[in-house]
Length: 198
View 1 (spheres, rainbow, N blue to C red):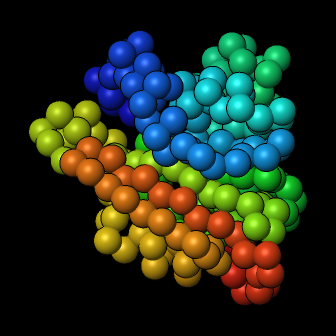
View 2 (view 1 turned 90 degrees about the horizontal axis):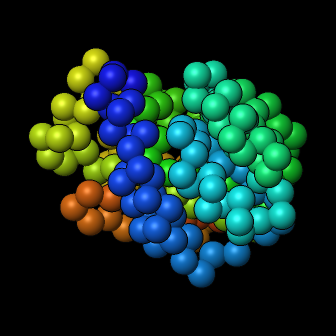
């Protein structure tokens, strides 16, 4: 993240938006089960909400400079794991749900995003949900926040097919001016091809 982006995402106003608007609207009515995974928690506002909704929460963070403060702040309630969402260090069918919020555009390529989707499917229990959101990338402010940063926008018109190709079913995608939201489910039966690593 550039300095402006780091400042923006660490503001209380943005964190409050994630906690009070983004996460509740994305997960409304969704059963997360007892052992959830959050991919790419960043500064952790969604992590705070998820930790109140499940008995056990694991957060997988690639950036050690973000993971360590999260561990210090939430480590008594959340297991913070250093790792890459495109090669998750978890066994098959471990989690009762997987979620990610406003992080997909930081994954460095469409192919890497697709590996993350496949990994999310692999680590989910049969029938368990994958849900999340990302920014649409509209507006000059978003562009300025990402100068010099990784910015691979997710096309909401193709996301349903990409999630299906990763092995998911019951895929739902919606978007408005600023936000893409999605839900999908790992099938009760899943072929080896769909869950193999990237």
